[in-house]
Image (cartoon, rainbow, N blue to C red; front, side, top):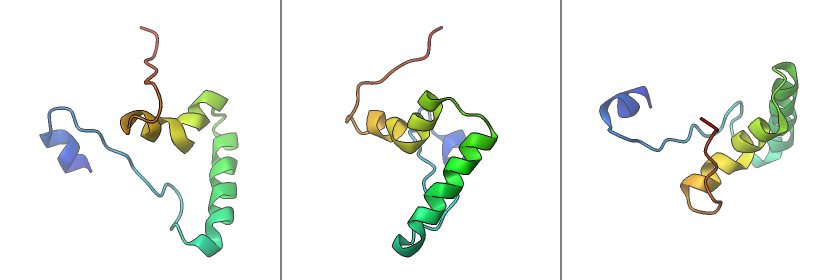
Length: 70
């Protein structure tokens, strides 16, 4: 992903499968682990929402983009 990001003018990238393999039999364990990491680094609920869903939803036009305050 680093090569693409550094050689593309405005890439839209999603780093998927954060912290897990995506196996259906083990997905609950991966979700629990990810939530534990969120707790450990004290992510706010809106940050968690962006990681879980909102970033991809905005990129694919399923949610209205929200831009950070300047």
